[in-house]
Image (cartoon, rainbow, N blue to C red; front, side):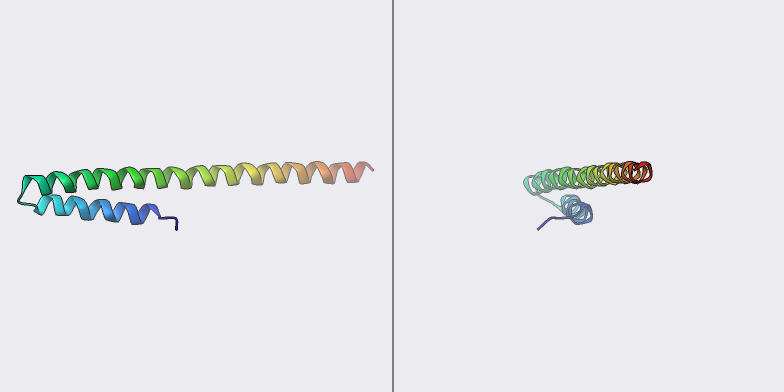
Length: 77
């Protein structure tokens, strides 16, 4: 199941909040590491969405160009 940026960002916020509330150093450090990891996953998910959108736009432009060439070729035939 693919997770979304929002999911990862929410987990990062939760971990950061738990880190702020922690009274023990080891718990605070663990939650800070978790928040950092969740933020990295959120950034990765966002980059994946952007890359997919760019690839989709490129494919759509290529299909449009091919359709235009096919229409032009049909007109000349």
